[in-house]
Amino acid sequence: MNIIRVENYEEMSKEAAGYILKKLRENPRITLGLATGGTPTGTYQHLIEDHLKNGTSYKDVSTVNLDEYIGLNPDHPNSYRFYMNDALFNHIDIPLEQTYVPQGNAVDCQEECERYEKLIKNLGGIDLQLLGIGSNGHIGFNEPGTEFGSRTHIIDLEPSTREANARFFASLEEVPEKAITMGIASIMKSREILLLISGASKKEAMVQLLHGEVTEKFPASILQLHPNVTIIADEEALGLEADSRD
Ligand SMILES: N[C@@H]1[C@@H](O)[C@H](O)[C@@H](COP(=O)(O)O)O[C@@H]1O
Image (cartoon, rainbow, N blue to C red; front, side):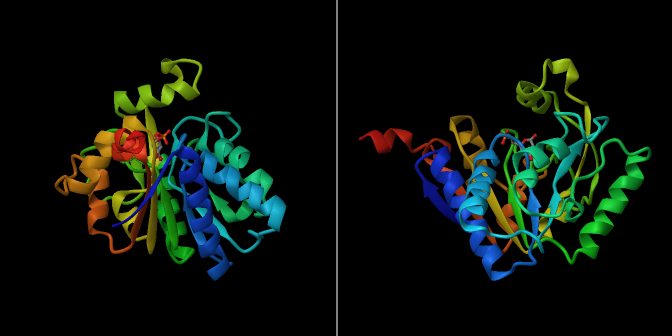
């Protein structure tokens, strides 16, 4: 795994946007796997700024998101579809029909999982998958214990994940209990992975990710086996903030 060390969240976001833009220049028809949560919002902000300033076009780009809450309509402000439109898609020139997020309001969510997995395949797979990481090592919404061989599936969210995400909702009770997420195997099939990690609350996760054993108890540990992973980590996440003050 290639690690790029940066000072803070802002530097991480700038570096990540630069990384994505470089790949986009190399392949204007790139299929990007995208993530939600607090971590990538700064990156998306930089992509928007670049689009407005330099006119970088996303007309031929396709995107597939990692996950979506079950039970929220796409226009619900806490749905990941809403998040993506609001944080990125509405501000760049990507046709919305080339952006894919699992449908959490599908009548049959099991069928939706199968449709989504096929869709990724029909797009020719993911060229570059952007990832954040949960404190418990989840990637997408693949909670500890998820099989490494899993494809897009329905997951029961851990209480700790619901608590961590409650900050985006009016109350903890409103955080859905289930989600649809790309599986670990779906993520691992991406040709390249860019993982962003920032802040002291992710320090333990960082240690396990880099030095822990590869185990389903810590889903992100599987990334040690992927041939093309880049991690952009800030000093707090790396536990280096004390050194930098010396
Ligand atoms: N499903 C998302 C993940 O894709 C994200 O990477 C992670 C960390 O979130 P944050 O970036 O807000 O710390 O948890 C969320 O629940």
